[in-house]
Length: 103
Figure 1 (cartoon, one colour):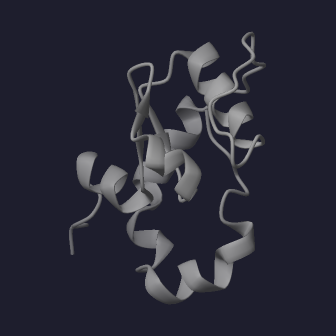
Figure 2: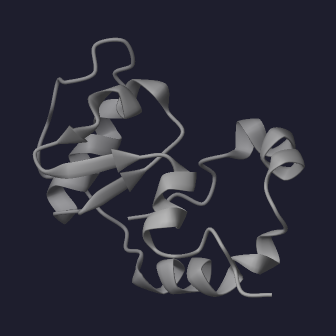
Figure 3: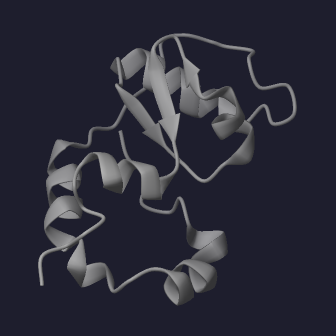
C-alpha cells in the first residue's frame, strides 16, 4: 500500500531537509513495484481527532500490512495498530537500510 501524494502539502520542507531522492531511488522503486491498490473491507473508529486517518488504518488492516510509513502525528501517536507498526519515514529508511546510501 503506498500513496504517491503523501507529502504534497509539505513538499518544500521535504525537499530542503532530505538528501537527494536519487540516493534512495532503488529502494523507492522496489517499494513501488510491491505497492497495490487496496479497497478497505473493514470500517474503523480509532483516530478521534482525524477521522480521515481511519481510511489509512482500514487499508492497512485489509492489506494485512506490516508497517504504515507516515508523517501524520495522529497515526504516529498510535505507534502500532493490530500488530501493524506505524513509523516515520526516517525510521523506515533506517529499518530497510536506506538511511546510509552507498557513495
